[in-house]
Image 1 (cartoon, chains in turn green, yellow):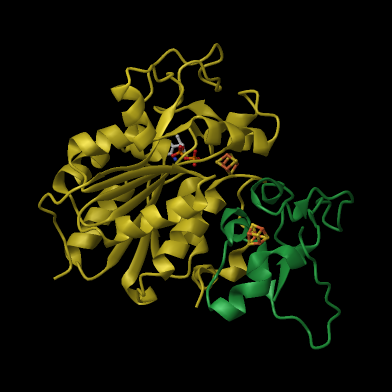
Image 2 (tube, rainbow over the protein chains, first blue to last red):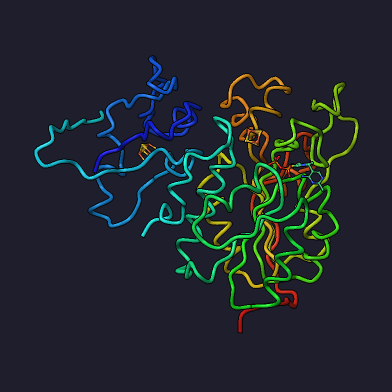
Length: 90
Length: 262
Ligand SMILES: Cc1ncc(C[n+]2csc(CCOP(=O)(O)OP(=O)(O)O)c2C)c(N)n1
Ligand code: SF4
Ligand code: SF4
């Protein structure tokens, strides 16, 4: 599963940049077509919920999704053969 | 099924300002409701007027968006007419404690089997930032331009004194705890009151030196004092600063309730 920010819903409040324990959300730099500076994802493969929600059959963490006041954060199925990076935290 | 299925997706994004905490509270409430295995046709959301009270409009179930302050009066009617329904109320601090104050204490006294989620942003958000009964001392609003001189209401204390069966307070920062508290509230027969302290960057934050949304959330986080810690501090004779508020489960009891599903 992969983490996605829905650009049609995000209002750019940056709350997600504060609450993720892995600091996956970073303040964005460029406004999008709607004039909103959507946060960027910094190596989202590190998110526990991306990696393990299938295996555990439940949401792990998920704090960003609950906190996002605009319901813009969710997880999507990856396309077949989508390039994937494996990040290892030391 | 996830809690996202409870949203009316065609109505999103909602009208709340960027960074408004109301959306977070709706997420937490729906996440708790989703775990209850409730039938959508047997669930009703009721609200009064205010930014917070717009919440039921974004939820797929039937709802009543009533007059200012009267959500609890309508909810009492719905629940007593048909105790089979699960009734959840979204309300704001102005809606619940100012114009609806009397309905609030009497709903607690009757201990009707409903769950009330109060999004307390300490101000009238919708009408442009007038002071509410929960605006803390010294805080600025359009009606308190030199800082509020009045003592604010503690809504949880009020609910406990008036007889509610379950009372808890969390903030928009404590999402997981809030979700759990709402779930316990939904499960508890009788009147359950959950106060969610939340940020209103547009009207409260802007006037009270919170330049960014994050600043106000940080302030909510640092001024929240866990009940257990408060009790310990009192035991040790420590002084609790005036601007702190208590979070956690404040009461759970079993007074006789009305309108409980049989
Ligand atoms: C009878 C009546 N009086 C006054 C109003 C104006 N009014 C609309 S919303 C509101 C305040 C709402 O404040 P609160 O409940 O704190 O909700 P918030 O917008 O802060 O979420 C007021 C006074 C009204 N709509 N109806
Ligand atoms: S689920 Fe938790 S770890 Fe994963 S991105 Fe969200 S806040 Fe970060
Ligand atoms: S005015 Fe305040 S409470 Fe209303 S939507 Fe804006 S931030 Fe939220």
